[in-house]
Length: 94
Image (cartoon, rainbow, N blue to C red; front, side):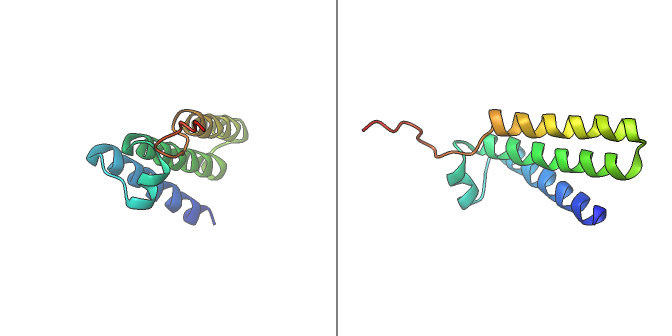
């Protein structure tokens, strides 16, 4: 389980980094975020959060694992608040 979760985190982080470097996001993801930079940042932070959480939970002492968990939650919070998914046009004037 932990190996699979770490692999998922690694794939998400690499996928997000690729979007940030190339400035290009796949179609469905591009439509879900306002810019490829936001899509890349969101996926990169989520991937890093999963990696930090899994590695902390499996390889560290209790205190270090708790700190790793709090760091992972912080990364997810930044991803959700700063890089949140949303349509390209958020102006819903009716």
